[in-house]
Image 1 (cartoon, rainbow, N blue to C red):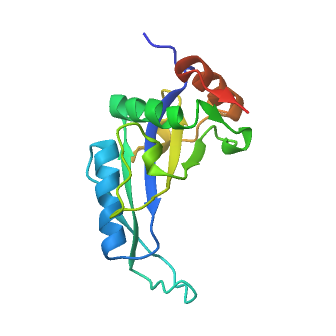
Image 2: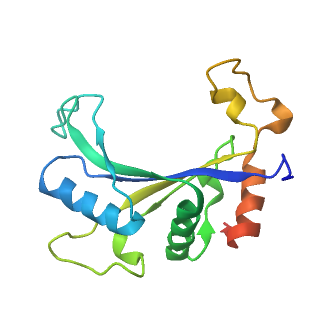
Length: 168
């Protein structure tokens, strides 16, 4: 039986925010699908920003959620673009991690295409321990006890052991 205190990756969310619809959004969708080998979904604007010309309900980016082995494979490649280093301020109190990659061509399999240009992306790693399902279930949902919650320190240790990540 697996250790109930052992942290694990629940999901990895990859987001490319374009800020506009049209051709750039289609190119971002194409890049994200090529990187993750999974069809991305559109992210829709929830607010109005007149300075950027954004209306409510307008598509402004693409994202995809990776789980399981596919998430770990992508994470190894993404951390490789950053030389396996993550800043300590990238971790939050719940043990989740978020970092950005400024240029999609930093991935080995991606080549620069002048038609696409340069697209950056945000990567968010959601961490949990076994048993976190009790907080999400519909019937008899309960809170996670403080002793079972993850901390930033737990996640740092997990990433150092599993992915050889250096926290800077």
